Length: 121
Image 1 (cartoon, rainbow, N blue to C red):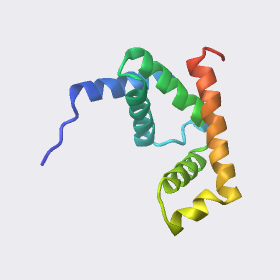
Image 2: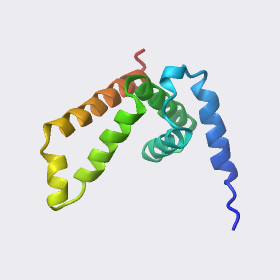
Image 3: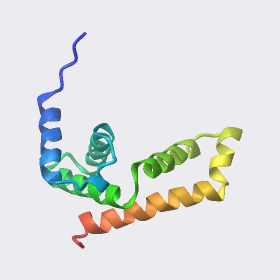
Image 4: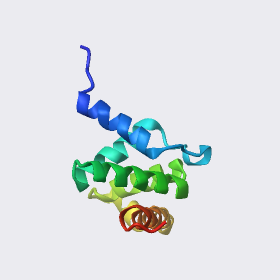
């Protein structure tokens, strides 16, 4: 079964790539699929508009400049694990090392929001 990418999806990907502009090598350790996933999730939360696309792309670039991809994945995994219930999730909810990783992600997200949503550079 062949899957086609909807034209709007392809156009959004192209627009995101063009809006992002040149990316420095040290900012580009986030794989393309992770970048697309972030931008689409962000746009779903902030509206499917051109302005949302620009702000979400900016936000991801700012986040990537602050937090290496491996640390982003670690913090995202911890946050996902904290969503659950039971003994397995207890360690993720009450361990300082995990709290620190999530705090790093939250700080990077806050900085990205300031840079991209509030107009500060």
